[in-house]
Length: 228
Ligand code: ATP
Image (tube, rainbow, N blue to C red; front, side, top):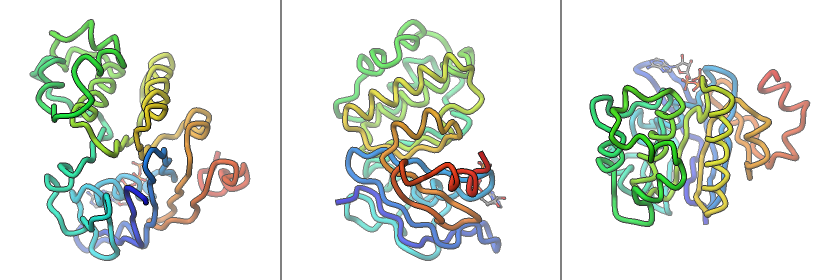
């Protein structure tokens, strides 16, 4: 059974329609890449899943339950952890306070997050706004994991980060996948993303235009939909 299913969702900002029919599915333990050029609807899709900008048509189901009309905190509590674009940690809390503030019962603990990201362990007492961009992204991922999510969503997993830090983030995502974590991820680095992806879902102008495993997402299709 799929953990997350979107069926032909349509989402608006006021009177302006942003999604015209987005369908995708994330199975248990799967990594699904949500792709598309800038402005094609990736962030809006994520906002719709979380109920932050609710879909006005179509259906979203999580864990077999329809969540389309639920409020964001109810949806998050069902087990979705978000690493938002731009990271957004509590600037005036320490690394440890940030992590503990989002903690919910489950396998993920402070010790496990520190094991995944040793750099955070060295900075537990440091305020979040004094961290580098890469460390803030590690903290954002750690915060999402501390909620013990069934599904982890990463919006722009490595955007704007130094190459060496990107490698650390990809290594962490590979470890999460190996541990069976279900993940929906947005990122533009196809060379890193495709090898760890079970399925690609490509959006164009607010519609799903391709869905399939990486080998089927050929260079021609990448060129057509992503302009790479
Ligand atoms: P990017 O890679 O640039 O983040 P994206 O694929 O995530 O792009 P969205 O941010 O979901 O795309 O944007 C989809 C469409 O919705 C775009 O046409 C965008 O201009 C529009 N849009 C996004 N946010 C708003 C908003 N707050 N109000 C009105 N329109 C919006």
